[in-house]
Amino acid sequence: MSILVDKWFAENTFHASEFDHIADLVRLKEEQGLTISLALPALNEEETVGNVIGTIRKSLVEKYPLLDEIVLMDSNSTDRTREIAESLGIPVYIHQQVLPQYGAREGKGEALWKSLYVTSSDIIIWIDSDIVNIHPRFVYGVVGPLLLNKNIHFVKGFYQRPLKTGRRVQSTGGGRVTELTARPLLNLFYPELSGVIQPLSGEYGGRRKVLETLTFFTGYGVETGLLIDVFEKFGLSAIAQVDLLERIHHNQSLTALSKMSFVIIQAVLKKLEERFKQPLFEDINRSMKIVQYEGGNYYLEVKEIIEQDRPPMITLPEYRAKFYLNKETEITG
Ligand SMILES: Nc1nc2c(ncn2[C@@H]2O[C@H](COP(=O)(O)OP(=O)(O)O)[C@@H](O)[C@H]2O)c(=O)[nH]1
Ligand SMILES: [Mg+2]
Image (cartoon, rainbow, N blue to C red; front, side):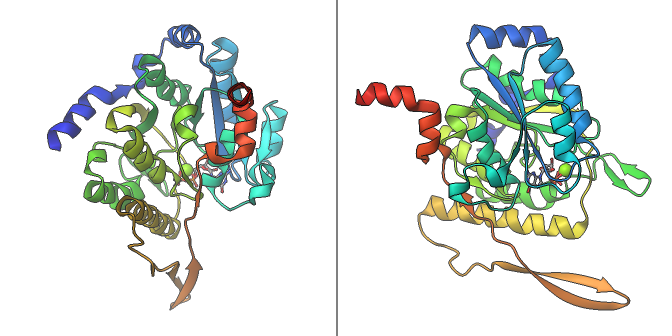
């Protein structure tokens, strides 16, 4: 096992600087007849979303035609997020209004799942819209391995995550849920994935052909679920990771991270149930007690936190009609 992981780590770990000749990437893309979409999940990101869109568009649409499409996947932000994206001329979707016949759940994963339906390219890339030090490498770094190697289907970004506490910045203190929950759990139950440096990174992407066959958790469990699914369906060699250098975003409170951990653990347990084909955790607790401290007193707040999943996009007739109508009529005709 250790040799297998070491081999994967050595062969499938890239660096964004390997792909900084963007003209070469565009040529590779055109030779392979591929198109690439970037979808930006956003919930109240007015501070950063404009700069994220502007920076990426200038370099990877206007200067080099690497991206064929950029869309914003919003979830009813209450700030100026949508207004800013619209003013920059990119299509804005509210996930609650996409495929409404399936209802609308809360969460980032729901927005990513629905982004498969509204985008049209062969390769889909997602990056978070709260990146403060946005740079085109966050996109071309993830695109690179997919254009370089036909056997790679899914690429995760990784980076140094500085933690800002007041005015102090610690160089590697960020990624607390990653180090204290996600990586230990993956090491325990999916040791093949133990070489993945940032399993929860929001900068990743893959081929539509693969992504449309995967189940999506609707909340923060989405990254964990997709990684495990790609591994189980397509094998470790289909996964690559890429060093995107330093990434700065808005660090969340410890309470928010605690809830995130709760969801990541649920996601892994659900995947284990699938693996063992039995309901191992029938009576799993769906609510979490959050400890609050105010004015010298402790109290407990109960928070219902349930990570649900969405079926593979390919199973939706609406999706097949949009992407495969011609082929299906060919087959039936
Ligand atoms: N559309 C949508 N985006 C979301 C939602 N929750 C988070 N996001 C976005 O997903 C990205 C990552 O979320 P964030 O809360 O920063 O998570 P963290 O980086 O893991 O702490 C950011 O761009 C958020 O704006 C949601 O419910 N809907
Ligand atoms: Mg963030």
